[in-house]
Each structure stands twice: as C-alpha cells, then as structure tokens.
Image (spheres, rainbow, N blue to C red):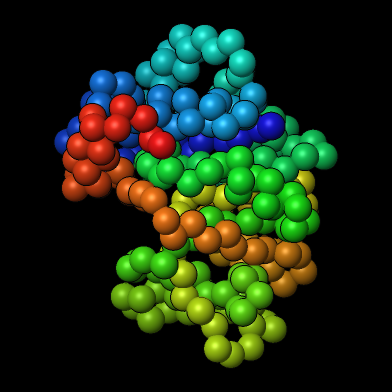
Length: 245
C-alpha cells in the first residue's frame, strides 16, 4: 500500500522552532515529528511512503535518505524550488502515487490513533473515490456533508464564506476534517495545468462527479501538532504512552 506525508509547509505556527528546521523535524518525545507518522504508516502495512519537501528541503532530504526500513521504502517528492500547496503537492507526486490502487495522505502535524488500515479498507469496500477522515469537534472551517456522508460543501466559520457543490441540497451536517484521507486514481482526473492549489476546494469540484465521502473517528485521540499548545499536548501523551496507540 502507498501513502504520502504532506511535509513541505513552513510551520509558521511553531516559530521560532521552524526558523531553523522544517516542521516535520521538530523534536517530539525523543524523535522528529515525522518519525511518529512514518512508524504508524509502516505498522499499518504501508510499504511505499512518499514525502514532499520544501522548507529546509536539504535538511529533510538528508534525514529521509538516512532512514532504513526493512518493510517499507521512502520516496521524496521535491518541491525545493516552489511550494505547491496540498493539491499541487499531490499532483506533483502523481507518478510516485498513481497506479490502480488507492493511497493514503497524512498531514505531518497530525497525531491520531485512528486505524489507518480500517480507513483504507473502508474506502476500498465502499468504492469511494476519496474518503476524508472527520470528527465532531470545534473547528474554524467545516466540511458540510449530507445524510449519506457525502461531501457537499465547505464553510469558514469565522468569515461565513461558503463553497457548495451544485446539487448540495439542504440540511447539511458540519464536520471537522482530520488531516488524513484516502484517494483513488480518479483523484487526478480533473487536475489540469494549475501547479499550486489546495486540496479541499479541488475535492469540492471532484464531488460534483465523483464519490467523495467521509469516515468518522470520534473515539480516541486527535491532536493538531502544528501549534505550540498541540505540540506540548502531543509530547505529554507520547511520553506516557510511548506509542500513538
């Protein structure tokens, strides 16, 4: 199984730590943040892991090239010259990801005990084109889904901005995206010449023709490690548990 870790970002919420290193290499309970994600992917059965790099890309390349895994391989999607946002990152890495099988995408700054294997299998069993892991939690930006769990819109809860799929209907349910999802080969079908673009607006366009669904994981932990409070919380959790699960 293939997976991609989105790790190119600047990590501005973690400054000044990220003034001298990429967010993915910020220390967390004895090892770099990204190492926890890689370990979780490998233990879940993912054998091919793609990591995109931009901020302190040379440092990231040196770290990733030094990793030796008996049961998995790591490939680098190089964005050294230009950061491509989440959608552009996926498109740029398509040759490393695309075959007949789905692949998982995981933000480098998310700590969760969600079963990645169950998420992947659920995606395959339901023949989804995209499956977004979601939770019922407070968020500044909500995905809007219908009663069948299909993506129909997005709302900025601070500004009130809304983006809707044309056939969205009414009575939509707000949920929070968890920064983890599974996508099939069809995800690349509407990607064109645009190089830099975010994923969620693209998935809203995809949802007009394809099956973009959600997968709930309301139990267990979920921590955004991309801010100082979240990083501290993750540190405390991992020092006690020694493992994500």
